[in-house]
Image (cartoon, rainbow, N blue to C red; front, side, top):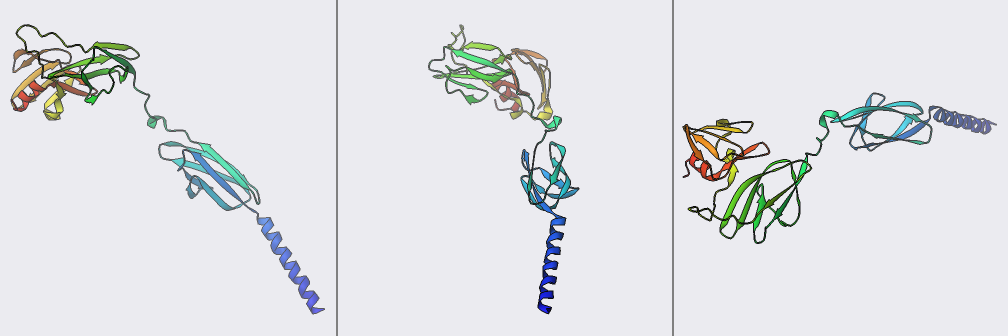
Length: 255
């Protein structure tokens, strides 16, 4: 009799334990985000970063907050049921101020009469001059090398338009050399940033006792009040002014 009573008591205790576990009820949540790496806050508590599997949750309604630097916080909810995995997937929205800027406007450059010429644009060699070149709108530097002749010039690309330039050798004018060794270089590589100012198309330089004024696209310049003519017109590439190397060497005392 005693053993029978003990067995019944043990069965009742086991049943009570199972009922308690069932009453408590646990489930799981699997959280994913696009992009991944979002911080997960479950019911106000930090639990990890996505993708994240959270186990041992009480059944019922849970609030999930997702945060990621540069992205808008997103709040969602998960209803957990016993013995099941609830999936939560969210697509985060990027903060407006941090979205990548729209692709800059571009235009097309086509070159002709390029036989035998080595061409570079903004310092990068063009591997095939027969192919159209997609370039950002604005000013660019073109260098053409054909034998011992090197020419440098600037050209402008307009948005959604095609610009065509000829690379044919230019016939030298009387009294001029057939070789033009001058080319454009970045002003800041020769003159400190603090010693020149760019105002629209106008460039003013105060350096080593010299005051020089010139303009983008113009061959005319003045140095210490005396007018002169440049071999190559200044240009702007991005936000950097480019001037003829011969002039820059004079400014820096290299010639």
